[in-house]
Amino acid sequence: MSLARHLSRTLRDRQGFIVVAALWILAALAALASIYSIYVANAAISISVNDESLQAEAMVKASLELTAFHLLNEKEKDRPTRGQFAFRMGKASANVDFCSEAARVDLNMASKDLLAGLFTALGASADQAEQYADRVIGWRTAPSAGSADKEGSLYRAAGLSYGPRGGPFAHIGELALVLDLPPAMVERAMPYVTVYSGRAQVNVLDADPAVVAALPGMTPTRLAAFLKERTAIAPHSALTDLGTAQNMVTTEGSKATRVSVRVRFDDGRQIASEVVILLAGSEEPYRVLSWQDDADGPMAANAGQGAVRR
Image (cartoon, rainbow, N blue to C red):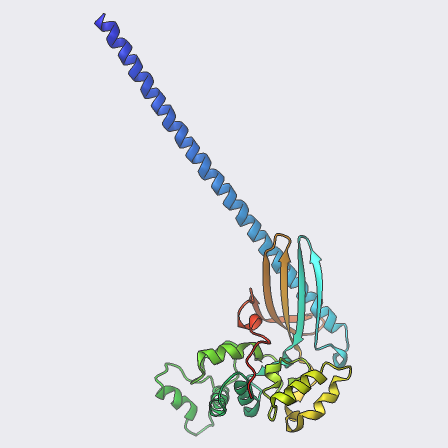
């Protein structure tokens, strides 16, 4: 009897062990299934995001092609200096704005007066603006042969490990390296400057009010009057009111054009890009000079919102 009781207990123990083992196996399978479902979900999200990124890039490239076609389809003297259009492709739409780089102040070509005027319009005092303009010109100017490098000595005296370029700005980001320019002033200036215009003048019919305010002799009253007149049917007549600043302005564009593209997907996601293109010849309609994605920083958000002060 005791043997039968012992065998019965052993059998129950073994059955209990089997049940516990089975439960552990089921728990492990459930965990694996849960992990796999998370992996599949994440993979699907990743594929979706990558797919949208690829589509956004394709739409930006299409925007550049359409902009170049629109400009090159006109004779050079008749090309618009700015414009906008929209199109839809797949599950997304694109809004495109383009504007000649002549609407910005060229760091390599602008005169000291225009540079100082821009810094003043962005909040610097007259003395500070003069100093900032001197340093910008000092950065882009090569030292005279056989003479002391005065600009370089200022950088050495400031304890900097680099000196001025002594040549044209390669990128507007170099403005942050210019001696004595505060980071806040550099950030404010970014939406209004370029290195691609190739012009000493600015196109005041397209320029931001902060750029127009940089012109010598431009008071708030004259600025308001000019901005109102340039939206008229014959905006060129407003140029006669600029006085001595007329030699700093133009109504022509440049071969470089800034294209701003905002792609909106049907699911609500948005991607913004800002690209500068240079119109070329027939074999190569255009070349990309600069490409920046998700342009939600100073170049987009602050444009047109600068504190204009004269």
